[in-house]
Length: 360
Image 1 (cartoon, helix red, strand yellow):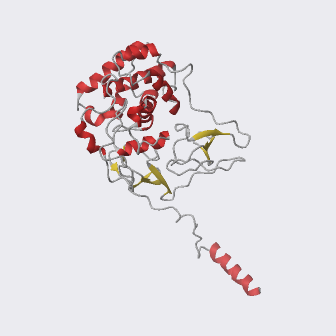
Image 2 (spheres, helix red, strand yellow):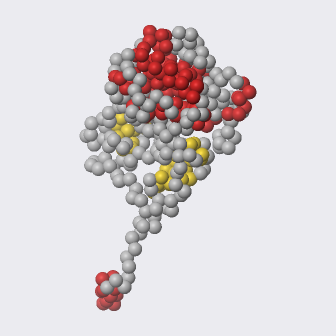
Image 3 (cartoon, rainbow, N blue to C red):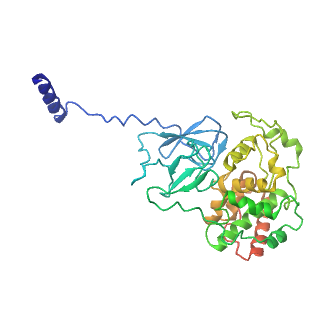
């Protein structure tokens, strides 16, 4: 016992004198940071990047969606370079912070970035609780008030059926107004965010781009059938189970490529990878895929089309997010002008100004 006390005393003196350094065990726990994410780079499944002190791994092809993103493409691998992991929620609740790309099973409860809690109603790979409302529900935790739902459309859709018919006098009967209204439940923040003017501007912007993509809501599927076999990216682990030529453009935004059908299907809770024909056979599903892209995908741009309209970036940024690599920066000014003309017509029908930044 005396010898043990002597050893402990000697050790204490050595530490105090600086002869022995105490190294924190947590310093080496963070992984090295991968190559920093770049907006212009194309990433395929398995590639790793670092962003804001955390490492992420791509699950499928992606470009311009910064981690953690909203589509579920990025899997969070944890902090890197000594970053501090997210803190646990305070108070009586001790549920973990939500992390995009983390797999959640039914019943999991998370704390979202707004400080409120949500419970997984269906298994999902880390979808955003306030966007993917089919997968998540608000959750009351420790006496805290229930999480507030995202803004909804007061009094219904901001475009009436009469205005919709005025916008698309020659539309295909497949693109029903009722199908569009039914699709709104998938993303309540769509045309439900901000002032009445902003909500109507977003509706006009969405419908103007849809008008351009479908020839005035005439075409349900892509007309150039020679392109059909090109939309199968065989590098994806899930491949093209519906057939190599099954993932051609469909619906109001002309959803194409197997990875987009997979991502949209996962987000909407629909088997679009194995049954892409749902998009051309069910009007509500078709509209949901268009709204999914609008709300969650940056495309060739730097933001979603929804964020462009509600945050004041302007209609031009929605063009960039949908087809900017081919049309913007002088790529095809006639196509840009076609979209702008429709937008100006539609905001006039809805009685709101067009706003700034119409071109890209």
